[in-house]
Length: 303
Image (cartoon, rainbow, N blue to C red; front, side):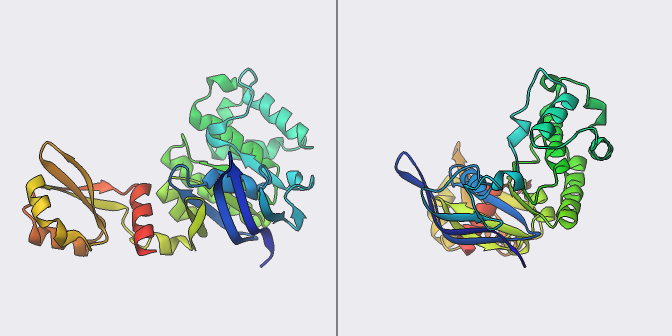
């Protein structure tokens, strides 16, 4: 498999504080790589360095065989900012497409058929002649994705690409990106907090903590629990104090909050759910959707 991006002893600092430290990382052709982590973990910094938009203070990054600082890299990478930022509000979507394709050496006229196909599929064509200032967040996102996809770069970097998109459009985006990877033998790198999108699309997940990669594997390993649900239990705070030692080593159980003498516990698996039901006087039990914070907690615990 062809190596596309290669990190060697990379460090990045801001104001003398190290925000990213990666001894070694390789990304290969036709991978869909999700970069996840808590706020401030280094996700966006990693995405930008891997795209040649930021340079490391130490170490080297090679992109398609070139130094990340080489001018050729800019021709090989397309970066989509979060929520469709970076476009001219006073121009229409069509005018923005024409302009940004032109400055990158492409003709909108020659790509008009493909632009219409993508616009129709993503339910955007009816917004082409609206000013960007009048577009919703989701439609700005669609516009920016279409502009990037039309250029068929071998590396596509997406910062929170599902922001503002509804569920049907997210599912369509999965199919569009999968087809893009196959047709262009491309790499897609993305940051996201969208668990279901990550599960459906990515082939590899990088989990960052304090600027370091703490997990690097297939999404099926990360999302080992097929259910995206968690259990929430409410108990009296006094009972929690008396029995907290019982759950100290139960890895999927954690305290969410204590308020008004009631403690809410979160449980992520069936075994620990049964344990709580058998050992605590439960005031209320409910199901809730697992958040990315739950995923982080589980991965960092089970490692």
